Length: 142
Image (cartoon, rainbow, N blue to C red; front, side):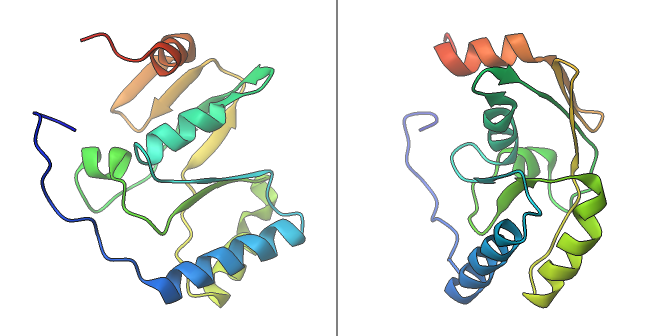
């Protein structure tokens, strides 16, 4: 809650689209095309990316470079449903995209996992993962 005020309405859920999305993910998993899948909800896309970077026994970096049609803050932190973040081998992207089209689900290649200990997002964010991990584990000090 920001400014001690609850406001706004959550976006409507398209249940048919949600079912197609879930079926797509299940097919991709069954075919062995994805390494991981993570919902994009609490905190939005960048929080989901960071939660994936903070894997047990390994911290991965990510380099993202993608276009968006809304403001950066909405693209990065919007909590609208109907989105799943997946990781996959680069050579699987064409098959994943084709499978997504079969389900009438939009697929976007956001970037790639990196051994670098940083999160780099477009030209907006460059931060060491140790700083982000500390904030994620301990919370923000206000």
